[in-house]
Image (cartoon, rainbow, N blue to C red; front, side, top):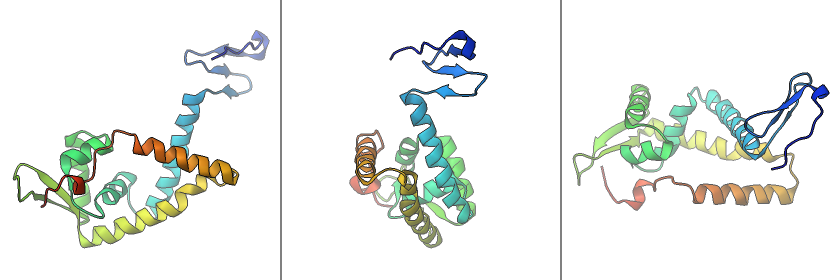
Length: 175
């Protein structure tokens, strides 16, 4: 990446992360990583708006969306969501107090703990998921149609090639 050649009089200095920070004007020349950071903020803000409308913290909404269709192994959920088992257990405790999820041991292996949505949690998880699926694409509303299709294609490729663990249906362990 080419380094910016701004004059010292502009009040700018190269930053350690290849950014050029301009203190006087508060302008920041950004690189790809910075754009991805801000894209994640845009996505998180839109997601949080939807969650707030359902009176759910984003973490609980994510959990409900993850188990809305079928039970999932707690260990797989922790890996998929990028959480420690302890952190997931605390999240499940909070969500279970609202009677939205429940734990059960697998019939095939009592050591495996499965998490599923309660009937209320399933309805709420489906509603949140549907609203997110409807409104999250709004982040690309200012792109032209070709760029929107490209964005969808690239987002799909990123998710499809990520290290998310497979859903419980691929593992055939029943509660």
